[in-house]
Length: 340
Image 1 (cartoon, rainbow, N blue to C red):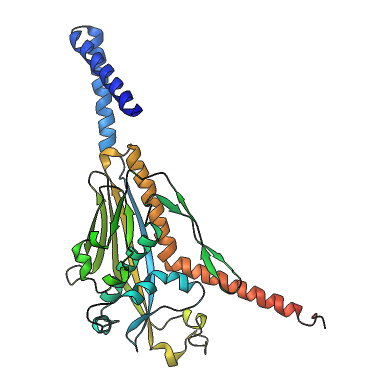
Image 2 (tube, rainbow, N blue to C red; image 1 turned 180 degrees about the horizontal axis):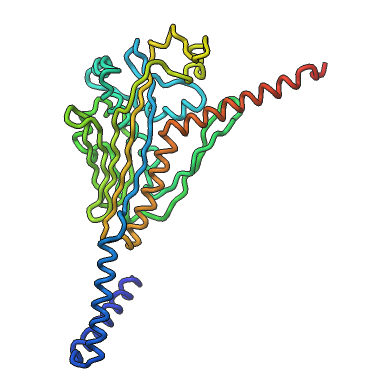
């Protein structure tokens, strides 16, 4: 109410001043003032029009492992990897397609066609957003860190609010999602409790990967405000599981190439790419609401990177191995000093 009264007073004063200027427009000082004012306005308008591109982007490399023998993805129950694959694993386990064999039939084409894994990653991303931003979109999730909890390791982190959004919030449920996503074979993996918070007035667009476009597109856009596009596409495939194989205890190292040839060809590693791009209305670069949206999207992209990028997971696995090595060294030092 106070803001409405303040803006009304400012508007009345502006109209009064404009009327005085118009009535006295023949005075040289007034003409000089009009010239300076118009010139200043043109400078401001040109500055806004030619303001540097108001965009954000983040590139994320996602790894998935597949069993070529069983024709399905595998989610190792190992430290760090359990948290890394949690969205995909829960989506896969909860998926109940109409045809029980449909998922398996689609995965038969891996590695020649990795489109099913793109579909899985797309639904898993939405599942993660539901978990992380179910009630509030305007939050910043702190960088996840490794916690060596007794008995089992975990990944911790907290979310802090970037500001109240109760009047600027829309909750999307499964029925509010685009019809196109319902064609995704993993759609049921979202679960019945799916809910995702976005700024009021935001719309969601979904485009599945097909022969014409080799990427899946998830788009969140609000007219005259922002346009967020997340593209998921296949990047590369390699046989075996690489250094992860001995880490999860699947196959011991048998040579200097870190490869167990007996089981190498039974598994594969697929790298997907998530290209995150966001653009904001160029005519509202200084609008506090747009600045708020930009800060939110920047925090969102950072969270997706820390949650899905393989380099972050690989770094945490390295920390975990270092911790185990340290424990072993300490244990070896204590040998011989045990009390009877």
